[in-house]
Amino acid sequence: MKKKLICTDKCRFCEIFKSKEQLGKIDTPIIKYEKYIAIVSLGAFIPGWTLIIPKGHIFSMKEAYFDLDFIDIANEMLVKLNKVYNSKCIIFEHGANHEGSITACGTNHAHLHILPYDKSLLFDMKQDGKEWIECKIVDVKKIVGDNEYWLYGENIDEIQNANVFLHIISNPESQYFRKILAKKEGFLKQYDYKKYDFLEIAEETYEKLRGK
Image (cartoon, rainbow, N blue to C red; front, side):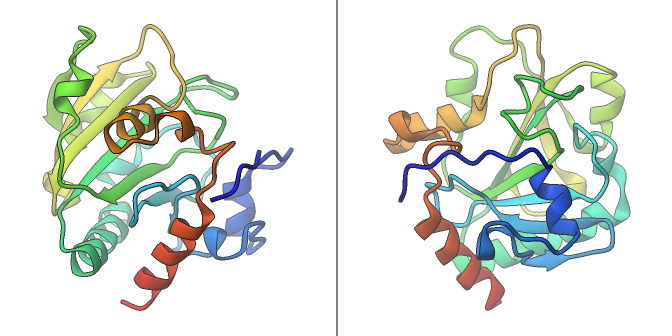
């Protein structure tokens, strides 16, 4: 684990689609489809932490959740994670709606986090009185409209059948789910992926998942 600030004037995810991987294995797709890729997550203090990223430079995943190509790549990744880590997965998204949004956590390109994790975040999410709407993942766009949102789901095995929890954001906050996970796992002071990249864990995840 190194302490480092990742900063670029270009979209890192768009560059990956152009086969310009700035961070080696971290930016090399584990799975590559025409419209989506799956890569390991920077700042992954939990093994198996991966991202599904759309090719288009959009701010949230709400349009993707009923896209058959997204469903295929997400389910392929879920199968890989289950085989390697023998665990069901949680998913989450910080759904922004504009360039430079605090909600986007410094990454102005949509992405869904998928990671093997056996604990629930629901208790922690509900401690401060935020309202969470339970729904099917395919209904996210209809519910959130043009609003920014946080999305979370657990015990996910098939993405198209996922039940998720949505919060329509009125008070933006950066890296919301990372902070919850970091607190639960003893990394609270190191939650920020821009300062703590945990490259060793991310590279190990890449090697394990590429082998399956």
